[in-house]
Length: 125
Length: 130
Image 1 (tube, rainbow over the protein chains, first blue to last red):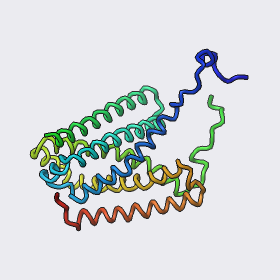
Image 2: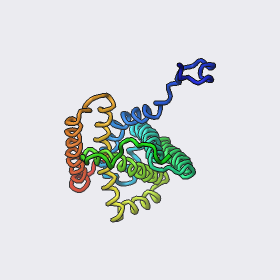
Image 3: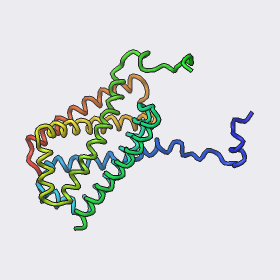
């Protein structure tokens, strides 16, 4: 007995393999965040997240700006996936769940682009 | 529908502190998502210029926010250390009960040591200017 659906047999394709996509993305962004977040946290603490001139001078250099960009992208992505799982696990009413998922997606994209824009502005000004 | 058997859930297990570490990882993760928004707000203020940055810093230096920032530092350190533990599990290492308990204890110790280091760096060390 085959467990495949008639449609699946007609299409003749196996699993697309993207069922584990979310899981993988969470791990890949986590690995990226180990060096990126450690670098950023240590940099901020060493400078005491200090005066405007110092922060501007720091983040307008090419390497810090590039690393900060990568950090913002990885953070936003990792956070979006994490919040999504939390919403899916604990909110069971369909309307509320969908609304929160959409809101979280909007918020994460907005935050990511705000961060990217801010860093580019500092770096390219 | 209501008569269907359920798989064993939280209430059936004897409490082990690794369970607390697990749910803490989630809670800290959600807290850090909020912290991410604050980070981006701070970056945006920095990009807007000295006046906007001064306003943002004034908010961040208020008593309540100082407490929040310390909380985010603690959450970050914990989620960072425990996240590495999770990645090692994902790689198939350290899944035995004794190993998982030992790595859990290690994460707690590492979190407190790093947080103490953070407090020292913020309150007692001189900032580096470049």
